[in-house]
Image (cartoon, rainbow over all chains, first blue to last red; front, side):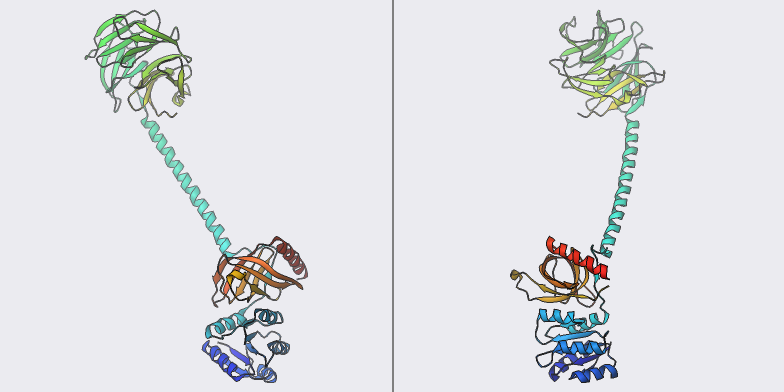
Length: 379
Length: 101
């Protein structure tokens, strides 16, 4: 609430403005003439003056005289007729605010309130930093930090998950000298050349299900068919076995080379010769006749596997898996480096496909237990 | 801080709006903050006429980039000036005004 002086020659204007200002909560002292207004400034000591700009009484003249008498007095000019240019010119000569008709309680209330508290213009070459801008940057920084924390948490989770997955992708075996790995559709088979034994392992937890000794030979490779199994021995012989409890040997074929890998694709038996560096395609007949022979497209073939579509080999020299074109196995249609063998702690010796993933077995370079790895391949 | 700068607001003819007036709370070369009883809306185009340091700026085109209503019921609008020439002139006038203050 404030004491307001009102100057207007027309009584009706004064009454309308007094009513509107009174409804806004102010005490109004009115004057009809400039002289009365100057007297009112001294007697009523108003905080604000309102002058009516009309044809009968020039608002600019009243404004100047009031400001001459009281230079810091806020003066609101009430226009009888809306005129923006006139309003701006009145403000330039000192009006704190100009209110246009109709003079409503709302318009006058906000106008008087603003005039009582208005300050000057702040200028600069660049926009001032607003609180909204500051809060925007605050929240942007907060969001950035939150994102950073979320990323760090996510990375930690991924790292822990990878560690967990790595732990679940490798198993140590209870022997030290593996020479090959195979999968027969239900179990994994690993040959240990030192003990001249072949181990059957559970596909679920790699526990040993069965152990079969081959005292008369040193097996280095094994492969399984629907009703037969084949082994290759260090002496160079390839033997056919029954799929009974003891893998009873049925027939043996003397080979001049050193067969290191065997794979059966359902029709042909594939062998790889470490000495000649060739892959042989054989018929499953009485002599395991070689129908085709191809140079190995890698450094050192250690084992073979068939994944249901094509032939794969384990290149122990380059520590990678090689995918072959089944029609022309001397063409490598893909190579996957085996990170698990990069540090040289294990030497890859066997490979198997279990229908979902490739597995390899490695011999420890330091004489520790053999280890199998599950590989998630990506092309 | 100089005395407040009054400004005349005019609108494109297609807006079919009467001229209005207001005061500048802040003024910089690329924009201003305007206090007016006239309701403005975000994205609205207008022309601002003002006087700064004795130099007149007529119909500087601008766009309302932000609007809020203050406690007195006034419209507090942030304007962005789009005319590079006017912005250059304003910058010069502002440098002069800042040098004098």
